[in-house]
Image (tube, rainbow over all chains, first blue to last red; front, side):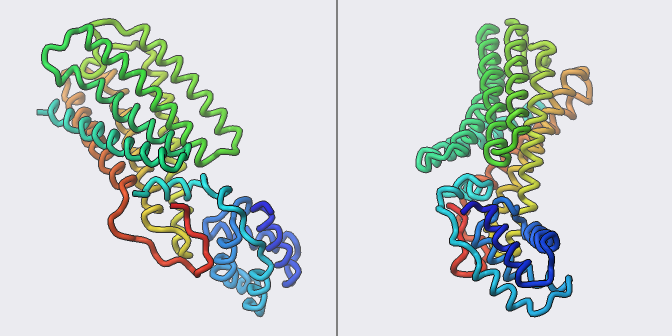
Amino acid sequence: MSRAEVFESVAEALERETSLDRLEARGTLRITLKAGGFDPRSVQADQMRVVIERLLPGELDARGIGDTDRVCRTLVAALPVDLAPAEQLDTPEAVFSRLGAG
Amino acid sequence: MIKLIGLFGIAAFVAASVVVGVRILMLAYRTRGLPETILGTQLVFGGGLGAAFAILPRLVPGVSETATYWFHQSSATLNQIGFVMVGYFVWRVFRPNEAWARGLVALCTLGLTVGLAGELASRSIGDTVMGSVTGGGDWVWLSLATRFTLYGWAAFESFRYWGVMRRRQVLGLAEQATVDRFFYWGLSNVAIEGIWVGMALRRVVDIESAAASWLEIVTAVLAFVVAWTLWKAFFPRQRSLSKPTAAAGDLEVVS
């Protein structure tokens, strides 16, 4: 599964679990990811999990969505297994992290 | 005195570039990583050997005009290779899938190549690069404009990603050392941009004027800044500065 599909699967689950329509669900998720410094096209599943747990409840509260704990638990449960490490090697973060290795 | 300060600044710049560049190339040998190879090559060729060859004639007594000429021709060539590597690194790391980035690198490589060819052809024995800076003709302006573009792009992408990493750090998904590395590399590139501006201004001001002296001092300070920021960015920390990550299942950055 590509990383763009991580975003897609969570966006679809958010639309199912809340009263947000497709555009609202995707927009909310994009805003939340941006606040966390992530791109919807490249966010990894484990990064998405942290964003869902730490940032999404606040965004959902702001949009009047109740029972955010249940919603977020459902979204986390719907996350796919992360991709093979080889695909993560040359992101800016990975490269700059390696450059400081002893 | 001012000349001495200038030389010390460049010496610090050269030393840091070579030491950091060699260290990164050794890392590249272990990791087989292309970005490390590109950046290490850039530092050794451009910041290190290129700058060193430019100042060597001033340090070695009795160097002939012919030898000086060949030092400067070599310096220009090594520098341009380094500048191309900067563009390639920024494209490869920050914008690998962007057609405009690929086009920008291609255009700048062409500009640097044409500029280098013109500079090499127009420089004569007896011209100097440092000091009177009359060698190389108007072709140096093409090179200056191109390298200014590439290093400005490098600084922009590095600071932009620094902002991204700081947001991830709040979530516990980025280590302090890696966050800092983007900042210091960005600052290094800004300081280098300042050096290019100084080089451009030295080509138009009277070399005996007070303005020229101030330019030399500012350039020396910027050279020290580059040396310091390269050291801060790319030498491994002795202590861990990372904040704890969010949970046990989080993916750690590749190290």
